[in-house]
Length: 88
Image (cartoon, rainbow, N blue to C red; front, side):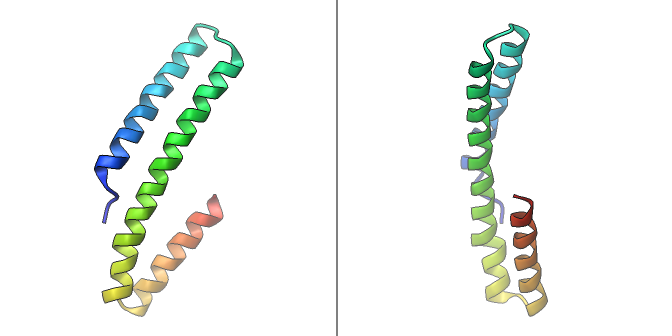
């Protein structure tokens, strides 16, 4: 189950707009700390989108695997999450 698109898409569209703004700031030779603040805002939006996608995965795919799936499917879902957390 995909995360709620109504939550994820606006976050990513806003982040994309902010990235365009950061590129413009760089072209305009803006102050480094102003650029850093905008980059932090982009990062925050991307993290929010990630949490929404993970929330959707846990409440959809993982929950389904534990309610109706076999042992291998449950173990696969757990391994996917562990792999994701190891990369964080």
